[in-house]
Length: 500
Image (cartoon, rainbow, N blue to C red; front, side):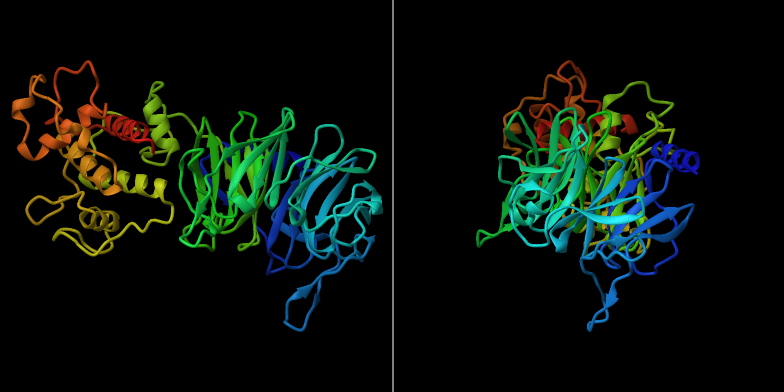
């Protein structure tokens, strides 16, 4: 069984995409965390039914805990009761981690950490009362603990969410407190001596190392009344926005993965940038509400609160066979701007159509603001409802990015550099980018400058001043078709030069 599960996860880790492990019962579930055992069994804490579930070969069963009694509101109610696996009760099982050959479970509403081993559910630490006392076993107290992670020495870190603290329990069962205050910490991960913490209350990710808090990603956002609010923005790690992030995991390559349940997405922090790794559009499949995460054999496992599934997200990306170490193609793909013709073929010398280019621009719009609506009211005569490009075409016309050729959009027409740079210039204006620096830029030194259409002159002045045209270029090459590789370079350079 272990070989089957590991083989599945190894295969999925190499495939970009999101997959749900098949499950049948109980029919209604809301998962908080996930854990893979040595035999390949996948456990999930079910906050709706107040039990720990086991996923084995597509079947779901109750691993530990009696199903919550149905309350007066018709929903299962949990409570705190130690017993054997079949008769124990959980108040609200959440984070899970392996410890000393057993399984620790944060029982949030009971304010305790439970421990599963040898068929028994016991209390590892905490006494059921909310508090923040250190000590051993029942002498310690917590307030709404959520995430757990191993500390590398046989102990655990505990997100003591209600106390705005991170606690530690060593292998001897002694609880202490990390000497720092965090705002509603939830997901935790520990790697190479660094503790990674999702600070949900401030919509950010921080690290704790050498007795110091360092912000890894996330900017604070406030409404007009000064109330902190969430957002959805990719880009530079320090300006990225999250909305009540929950889980965190760290891959072997140092990539940090963050679940962003209110944005229905899983995000990735790599090389100082944040990208969206997976996202649910319909809220009934994929990462509809990804809660706590685990990284396992190159894949992410996300416990989903809406679908009730363990979602497997591949983190590996196959390199394109027809692209030889082009950093712009790789970066454009990672940022979700442009994809391959297939998983392995990019066609770098293939041409780009007008519909394809405005679609790439719309992806930058959503990269900046994940909640942006890509659609509009204005439509040119050849944009038909239901066409794959219809929404982006309407959006581009509404935003003033596309004026049209006559009364038509001409979606399948190959776009040349002149049209692409002009659309990008208008897009920059729509984003509020300062394009005035190009007003006095002289472009007459380029061999083909006098052949440029007058409607594109300002766009090229800006493009040259912004560094979008190579310094060593002697020609603008404006009439040449824009290849897919050139589109990738143009858009990535634009984002980097404009600080997006």
